[in-house]
Image 1 (cartoon, rainbow, N blue to C red):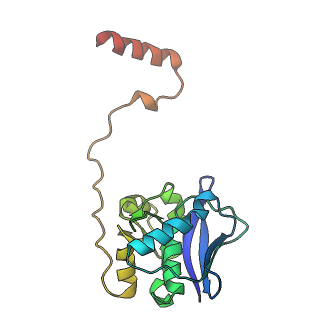
Image 2: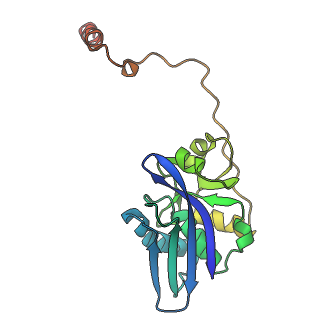
Image 3: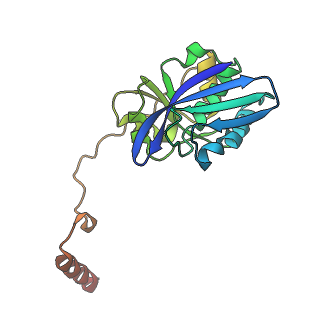
Length: 209
């Protein structure tokens, strides 16, 4: 069966949309990732397998092919782990395709099934067209900065599976942090140029201590 799950990847400093396509078929058991993956993406095989097993799912003893589309763009990082795991569950018919409609997934998987944040979350979420994005709970505040998605934060692959399978609700979103009430204090690190004036201030500060 074929499953397609939206996600995103980083190219330089820009996020690029990426469709994770997983095909599970009969044949010699194996796991292949195509679509110009870098080393981190290819290592998703071991992370996803361990995360699924740790979360109580069996690993398919069949041939699994993962295509990261569009194939002409280099894919980097571990942020596609969560999308690959969800696509495998859909392809294995443990989750219905309808359950993932309108959802995109960005996050790294730990071997224990935990969902972790990845760098460049703002750029990644900004590249996603789906109205809802599932990320690691630690990345919720950063993902919300884009301002045009419903962000769902999860701590584990089990929480994702239960929500998609209808066995539980999505975890409640953490409260948004209040903005600071006062302006931050001036910091010499914010000064650009003026090397003589900076040196004078540093010497003055050193001599008064």
